Amino acid sequence: MAEPSVAEANAKTYGRFPFDDMRDFDDARRGFIATAEDPVVTDAEGRTVWDLSAYEFLDGDCPDTANPSLWRQSRLVARHGLFEVTKGIYQVRGFDLSNMTLVEGDHGVLVIDPLICAETAAAALALYRRHRGERPVSGVLYTHSHIDHFGGVRGVIGQADLDAGVPVIAPEGFMHHAASENVYAGTAMARRTAYMYGPALPPGERGQIGAGLGQTTSTGTSGLIAPTLDVTATGQRETVDGITMVFQLTPGTEAPAELNIHFPGHAALCMAENATHNQHNLLTLRGAEVRDPRVWAQYLTEAVRLFVGDVDVAFASHHWPTWGRENIVRFLTEQRDLYAYLHDQTLRMINEGLTPLEIAETMRMPPALERAWHTHGYYGSVSHNTKAIYQRYLGWFDGNPAHLWEHPPAEAAARYVDFMGGCDTVLDKAQESFARGDYRWVAQVVNHVLFTDPANSRARSLQADALEQLGYGCENGTWRNVYLTGALELRSRPVGTPTVTASPDLMSALTVEQLCDALAIRVDGPGSWDTELTIRFITPDRPVTLRLHNGVLTHTIGTPDLSVPDPDAEVTLTEADLRDLLLGTTDLATLTGQDRAQITGDSSTFTRLLGHLTTPDPGFAIVLP
Image (cartoon, rainbow, N blue to C red; front, side, top):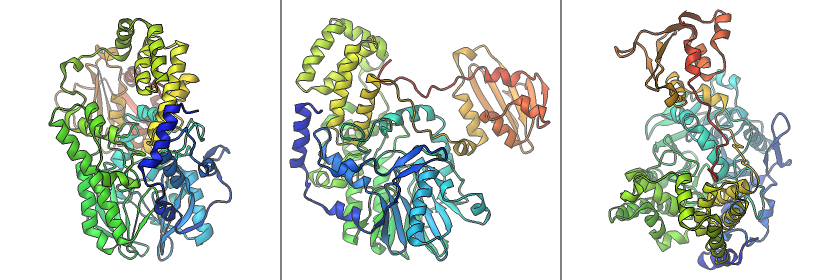
């Protein structure tokens, strides 16, 4: 249960915001047609990958273990089914973290953003067809390069559709960013995603109630089909199955490759994930490239200028639409002002000498923006977004020499605890702080005890209690999930990475250059200092040379320069087999045994190279050292 201080703080939320404003609930219900008869979506083995009934508890009153503002947002986001946006445009909402949008053409239907996994995407398309007829998919459009907007594509089209000429449309740079984001730091991102979305937490009043942007991530089979048509410029116009689209490229906003879409024949505007009913992340808690709030705001201004004069409804890849030109202008300009204000005021405070932590505690949003529900920090937050802006401009160092060469966490923890009188003394004082409701301090100070003595059961229990209370008070869905997942791991065991994003499709989408990079980041540098080897792969189109030297694996595509020595071995094979070899889905013995590869020189060279690679740990510790 919530401690009195948390319950009291949550109760005060009702007096801060206009809970009697029900317009969002009206908009979230508008156009509802039907939902699925069977609430459970399963995979081929019968495993549940999505349960539409999991969040029915949100229909009840908000308990003291949840922030009422987050509870309100989760009630809105959990609403599921098929909705009519405007004549000819429909959305399936609540079937995954994101929405699937369906635009009816002359003969079929254009699918925009086919969710995370094939199973939920197929269920969403089946719901649409049940009520709108068996229309074939005449096109697929990815608005941007995050997996919840392309991962379910194989649930809506297959190879036969591609062979028949069904186009797959995406913004320029989509494939590079879709593949690299989920591979280079993919293991760490996936582990942290387990905290951010809380898939291991049971849905309920004391557990997972949503992530602000959507409820959580589905756990089915993700895939990727490469685009066949790139959008390369703002103003580009394409027609698919009689559906005319005018695009606005918005790179560097919510994703490094993203676009908005105007449908002039429908007076409709798709804002992708650039304008949703929450404050978005500038740096997601799972980790990513820092997004640029300055250009984000500029692209929102441009969208209003380019399109809103001919728009009656605006919708996005998450949440519910906004109808009416005046409402759309207000919504988009308030979203624009949100990111512009965060950017400009953070820079102002940076230039006054404030540090990231000081800026996060000092920043206050204008009253007009704070009154608007859609600017609230359900997914991003003022606190971690201002820190992201600081990081974008100045990096990790706040300028204080005392922070330039600090001890790493475990070593610093031992010194702190020793200075403070030992573990028992620290825990006694922390228990007093807990009783006063100072859970932030408890979490900060008990962390030192845990990093000194991770087996200390009293510390684990107190830290879990503190994290739980912090979670109960969060307006931000991802913060709640992070705190409660930390408490869960302290009380039981690591939850690992329940959602796997590096699917075979994503891995196969990597270029040869990216595959070489993916190998390079796995090299055990210190263990390779004295190793020198070079191997050259001869493919019909170009040679690929790998060299391990000074603990660094470098690659050359094409003719190598004079710094690369003659290879220890040369392997002749096709580029497809080279890709499989670098992916680890085959080995040289198999290729040579099937006469698909010929080796000259030292045949052990590639095996020796593999011996210098490490294996990432998908379950590394987070709340313990």
